[in-house]
Length: 252
Image (cartoon, rainbow, N blue to C red; front, top):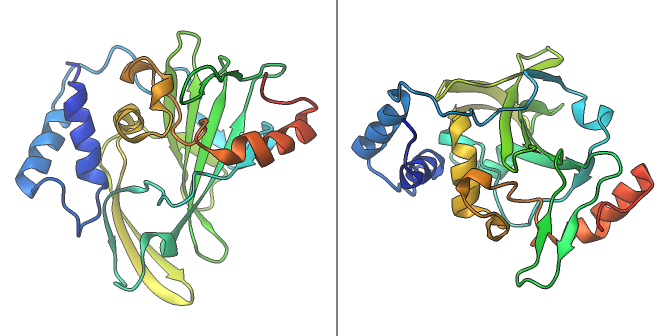
């Protein structure tokens, strides 16, 4: 069965809030999680429809992605039930992130400045990537998240992860696997425990909390949340870097 939008949104909040700021109690969280797990009929189209089964660690550079700065002042949504063994360390002390985008060759983003706020029409094939990694020395990859605009106007969302030492990242299809990492952060041993975000949560989260959801007609067609008009870096530095690499402006 297809879950109501409200249920999905509540699930995202339930697994993403910090432990000291509970949104739902333990019983409510368990009910929502079981509801999702026990949905025997999968969605007609999985959220990762149209995305590759695997990518390599050098995917952003090899495919010509150009880095952009995310909207300031936000912690990366790494996962749910986050626990950091050292109480003095916050999420940003342990995790860092980078964002990248790539348009199809010869395509541009059309800006509609007659609307307020401004809206963008992304060409089919637009890809946006979010890289999450631990602040170890050297940095250790946690996962790559890829969003791509599909021919039907929807966006595919995929979460890719790799075993330590492997150059190939596999598309993640399962939900709620518990994870534990023993790391050295700033010279101190730290244990980090969390649940990876479920693949089906991306659209609900972007629709409920995204900075650019006014551009999309409904949750089924929602796209990226940081690669949007509200991000001042995109029309400035990112556009210049993109033109320098690909020989043309990414905007019409």
